Length: 268
Image 1 (tube, rainbow, N blue to C red):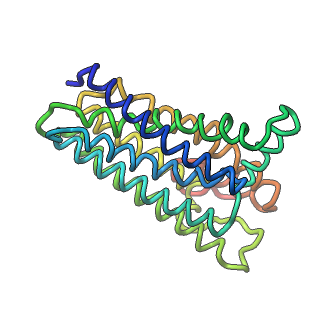
Image 2: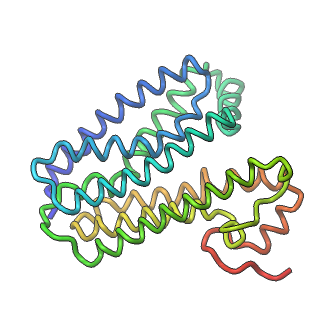
């Protein structure tokens, strides 16, 4: 069972830790004039919150340990990859467009824009996302059930799947002869967004562990949020229009390839 008062205290502590970390990130952005490195903290922040929560538990149970491991594996993999990508490819065009819009249409300077449009919203979104990793750590269950074991193995598969997809895409982009071409090899032959699919599998699988710990309703907003973001906001909706403008063959690729769930490509 999950004690509501204890769950509230865990999330309050997570909010304090998150606010401190995002304040530091915001201050750094004032010097770099580029907030797009915050994407890497989307994963790394979950790791920090998971460990901060785990450190508060006097006698961590098996669910706490499993969720700490899964949250750390997902967050470190994604965070390090996005930090590497930011270091190699520079500022994300999406943030540059947002900053220009905030300046021209709303009269915001960079400090106000990065605080109100980037760091504060992402702080709260990250806390919601992390619910399945944080709240179930206080579960008083002494053993993992069947749902937990299914969730653990599915989450590991999801992390591996998105990691392979990102590695394949990075290798493809690193070859000069692929400039302007559509990535339709490896996992990308079966899904236009295999990395996002792996993300969704991971978080719904982590939620299964949370359900097994007795925190299903408490933590359902986490996987619902990442599903909404990747399918309706910052995932496919932002990448596909850009690819259609810059990749001549993308429309044909889009017609033959599944959007998320990996499936055999359709015949021409």
